[in-house]
Amino acid sequence: MAGVSVLSLILAFVILFVAKQWSKKTVIPKGLRELPGPKGYPIIGNLRDFPKEKAYQGFHKMAKHYGPIFKLNIFGDTHVIISTQKIADDLMARRGAIYSDRGHLNMVHLVTGSGDLLASSSEGDYWRRGRRFSAAMLTPAKAAQWQPFQEQAAKRMIIDMVESPSRYVYWFDRYATTVSLRECYGKVLTTTEEEELHTHKIAERMHNIERIATPGGYLVELIPAMMYIPECLAPFKQEAKELHRIESTYFRQLVHEARLKYERNVEEMPASFVRCFFEDEKWELTEPEVTYILGTLYGGGSGTTANAMQSFILAMCHYPSWQNRLQSELDEVVGSSRVPSFEDIPRLPLVRAVAKEVLRWRPVVPGNLPHRLTRDDEYEGYYIPKGAIIHGNQWAIHRDEELYPDSENFNPSRFLEKEYPTYKEPLDTNPNIKRFSAFGFGRRICPGLETADRSLFIQIAFLAWACHVTKKTDAAGKEIPVPWYDYTEGSNVMPNKFDFDLKPRSQERMEIIRASLS
Picture 1 (tube, rainbow, N blue to C red):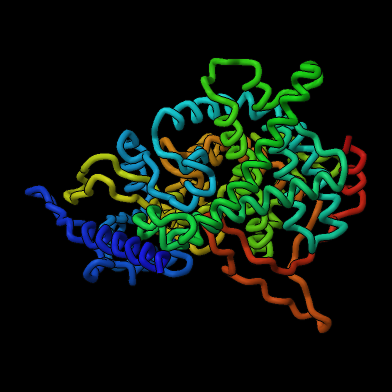
Picture 2 (cartoon, one colour):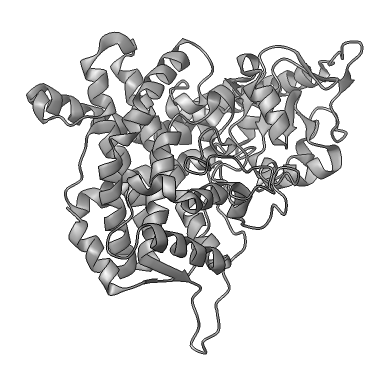
């Protein structure tokens, strides 16, 4: 009975908290208007309007009715949905000083331990120190030093994909894992068992984060007062505690191994982010703090490019003519007697355009992680209250017809031909994914853009140079359909597994790859 009484008190508290939140009247300053949006219900507000699956697609549909910026009220919290690049830039980039805090991601906060995940932490001293360290590790000059490892990992990926294309998810994950481990910890995986262990560990960790960061995926995201429920009565807290134990143990182990190697013989410790931390006290970070910062960089580097490469394969199945054009560009610039290299980047604008269009057509983070407004603001005559949760809906932004005509179609020409609003010269450096909204907005943009840019380039270049992707055919020779949009749920998404054929363009090209693999 005592347990029931405690639970009753907690539920009563939550209900009172929600009722108090709902009862707060938003006073619109004179001369300003309330943002458009659906009419809500008492207490719950627009809870019933909040999309239950793939919120980014639901928000896109709502934007067609309410406009490019609208609001939802969920239990007293204001959620602002942005659906165009212009508004996203105006608010989250140009007014970044007040739009760069993080919206409450309560489950992520619990899993990562008091907001230690840099990408989801609130603005503050820890975020600024962590961001400074991350930015220093991910400059263009730093990113360039990892190119030899990226090339070697891409060659191994091609060889294994030709041997077993049905395991494509693992091959893309392994590429990203081996490169990220080398960058972050100086760790080189030398056995198949090691590769499988770390690839599966970080993939599982990323899938957990993606799942728990899904907008509305847990009720505690919509009713923050549930954070006051004791752990013994809150299954979501028990789940988060176990996930935190698993990932923090893994991240600490990686730093511990690196520390032992560094102290045993610093000369044998390869260049890496963790070595930079060991060697310089200027970062003003503790080892527990840098452990999670490195874990953030490791996980981010492992997930984004692997998911994007799966969408690249999907695009080649649906748009074979673009694969033919890719191969023609590579044959003209690279030829058939050597593999592509990073030195070819200036002369391969179509490879870069395809990489950017993949991220636009099928964004990896279609809903974007929410920002939070830190003071009252006004935009185009609309009032936006302090504390509003700001959703830059990448799915809708990348389907803004003014910026991306015929947006549902995969069309890299939009970055290469003058008739399109997204065309930009010079073509030896443009297009590229630097400052591209697929990686976030303003001060919260992903710091790993330079490395991601190079990873996407080398993987796409190698695949198109060495291989040919087609839809599978059945016993009667009829093409087996490939889904148009069948993606996982979560904050970061990827296509659900689909079948395709992948064959080498020639055995000679495969021999060249094998011969160049060190």
